[in-house]
Image 1 (cartoon, rainbow, N blue to C red):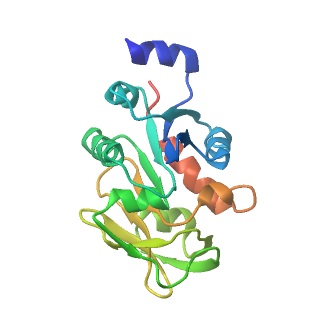
Image 2: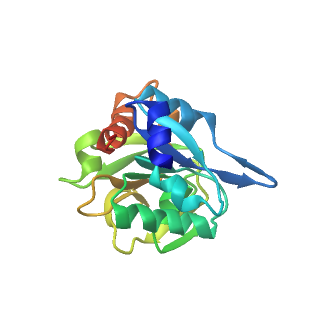
Length: 201
């Protein structure tokens, strides 16, 4: 019933849940992600930790795990729920790190720099953006991807993108495409492909 009510409000555009990030006593989401989802054709809603979390996830056609500083129990629950129910999931920076098993302090100083990535042939990331330049704003990097496949690297070996096999869209990237869509059509197409992978019924 909740899904039907929400769908009647949002009509035919896919509902994209963005996981809220804690900042002291505030739960927030960066406006750049909200604007990117709208620009690429989605209707963003904020996912908050609550005892109705599963009900909230049920109305989402897609989920964004955004960047931030801290990981909470509900983050892993949301990732697992997306995998089990094949809901398109897009992890950004910390969001990608949450999707996998192990991260380490970033000793290679990729913070606040632009650098080239090399994508794996045949991957979704490779098809959408190919070998390209991306931004970075992270203090940790992924070292163990678990059931995911690595689909992009930086020149010095940092894992830059991961994909979960045989899902509609379950991808994590270490950079911030939402900050680049106004001047980089490849990054726009990446978010647009995520939106297109959702099923709005």
